[in-house]
Amino acid sequence: GTVPGHELIHRKKDKFDQLIGNLLLALSWDCTFAIEHVQGHHKNVGFINDPATARRGENIYKFVLKAILQEHVDAWRFQLKKLKKYNYSIFSYHNNILIGYSLSLTFCFFVYSFGGIYSLATFIICSFIAKSFLEVINFIEHYGLVREKGKSVERKHSWNSNSKISSLYLFNVTRHSSHHEKANLKYWELEPYKKNSPMMPYGYLSMLYLAIFIPVKFYSIMEPKLKDWDKNFASPEERRIIKNRSLII
Image 1: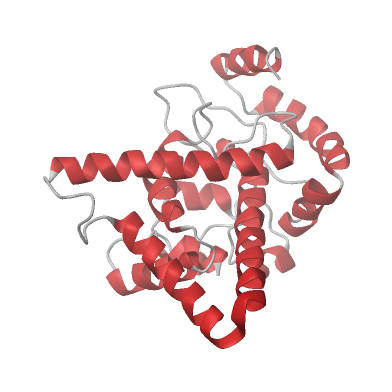
Image 2 (image 1 turned 60 degrees about the vertical axis):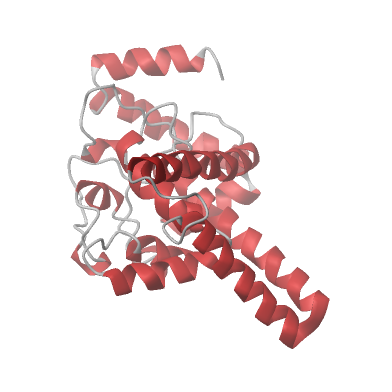
């Protein structure tokens, strides 16, 4: 449920859709994603402090663990700031993170009640795998791309793919530049950009499994694409950022 859940949490004007999105994310203990992704990632994409923007050559497995941890930290920071602003208690029903944790615990309770400890263990493992897959999608969506401070998010700051299978399976998250331009659009309304936007060499699913199981191959395939991005998409300031980051990797 992570992919449709990701889209539904963006529908701010439709509270029912947002509720379903949060329920789907609660299956993988990922209520913080609904907060950090909307309030953090969509504003910070391409910046070094964005947990969902992978740096060039970054280890995929470390990225997944780091992103999961940092998203929780950032989400709590956003939530506590909101609670303080309106003078709400951290233990009130206004705390969306505690509500999300409660939903996840409720799912676990029902799984345990019907299937016992082994079913619960399987459910938790599946939840971790689902969350990890979501972070791998994050990994390939912006891999190696940067953005200079003070500049708006543009088409060039996301990798896209018009592969039919990947687009169907992932609810058009493959049209990622369009998603970042207008996050409130429904998945069938996203534009399949073919010009003036970076394109993945293969479909998202192919790149996803390469990144997980053969990361060395993923890096080698993306290297010429990144060189092309540096030459044809990056601004002079972004090229400077890339050069400075490469010294740290």
